[in-house]
Length: 231
Image (cartoon, rainbow, N blue to C red):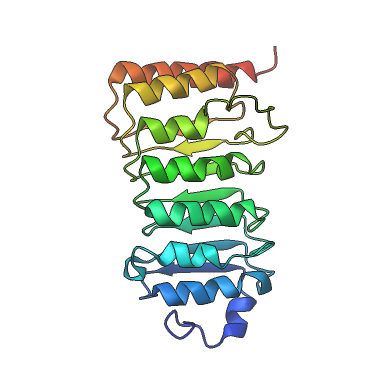
């Protein structure tokens, strides 16, 4: 694996602070190997993997191997590859058991994340209190997935969770997804209800929602930002 990406040895990978791999020809087994090193890369802060050749189970293999405390210093993770219905719950499970404990910046771009995948991933994302940037552009999810992320319905009889809920999210990118008017309405309501209190930047380019629906979201975001200004 290290030879494929141009590294001389695994020691170089273990000591790296940034890994930026685009189209290196990595396979699903290579990503599984990478996951086994997740607990012995204490210096790695940024990991980018954009790899079409890994196939539909590459992210699943990567996520399944991330044990508790894996990638302890990573604050930036960018996966531009197939996540899909299998990779999303595997990634959610890895986050749920304590992998990537310091994650602040998550990019999942052009990753085949539909509604079912985002519904599976959303609870784990909402329990990452340090998450500040979430980039989901180029994925085919629509209103159902977005609602699960920003405004999930409460479970009957469930107590409210004390932390989480995207309270620190500053930037959300939904460009070129399938969010329509209903999704925009859910997003505007979440903003109006204080569910995204830190949000400053929201991107909705190339979605099928009407101009009026997007303008309503813009107005809700402007009101949220204004509410934080000193009186």
